[in-house]
Length: 361
Ligand code: PLP
Ligand code: COI
Image (cartoon, rainbow, N blue to C red; front, side, top):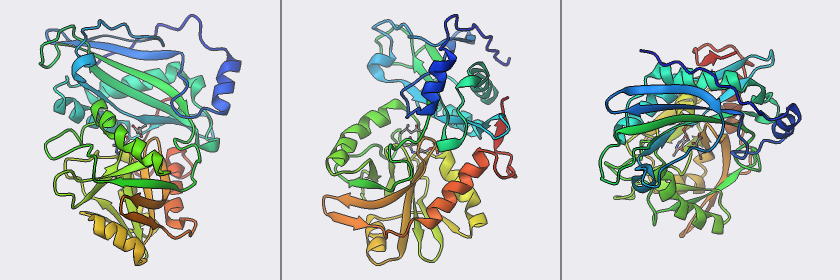
């Protein structure tokens, strides 16, 4: 039976002035809205106790399994306000399906696609005044997550699980906005391997990527590009984004989905609209030699990272222990065309011919 999420309104919500102040300069991940979604699953009873309630701390017993064995998954999607004031989600069913796939990998329970979308939509409705306008590429970032809340220290799939959704007004993920970012390439550290959890959106993948990210910061880079862990013969993805290369002859190249990288919804959307922009999409193996050699010999003229948080951000260059490869300073015209093509759909500035938007309000 479909879940409903009755609203228990926050008795002391933020003032309109507070909201206006946050929306004027939201940053990323710093501010949270008045409400949150919570639901509980038990092995014997399934999903229940679903509601939208005042945002606040979740009380956890110190023996809650997630704190010990990291049985946890999450999602990230955004609500966009269009010029007419209406509010829309972008492909939320795709996030819901990926949440199911992540749950299956981490032995967490299945949440129906409709329940996931309803939960997110009900939170957006309750906190609609927190959805910024489109200027400065602002939106309401939504973070559904699920974790093992059972109080038990044995290692097995938890029999009590909590699902929650929180919301955070967001501006650009990188403080520089669309300024090109530099990427550190590591083959010292891996984030995932064949048979591992790379294709699941689970917190542990991000914990595993931090050491490389900090190595990248030391070299002036904002993100890390990971190489396949065992054979080191293919480029995979960044710690929190997928990666694309643009060739001089108009090919749009991205590493194929091999089970070790996250199946990005932005990635899929870009591959789908590429032809409209005169680009030929190619999903295939990209070797480190091709990546570096292509930049050195001028075959690769642009590169960019993409994801819900990052949208589409140009890459200025790649650095590794062996050297540095700079992309031409050409203003990244094709990257910006892709970026604007995706943003125009999300903000309703062009017709939604693929049925990607779900109107919430
Ligand atoms: N890869 C990783 C590791 C991510 O964390 C993300 C962000 O969610 C992506 C790729 C891009 O996925 P999406 O476009 O669905 O946000
Ligand atoms: C997202 O884009 O939603 C992510 O989860 C990436 C994270 C780096 C914020």
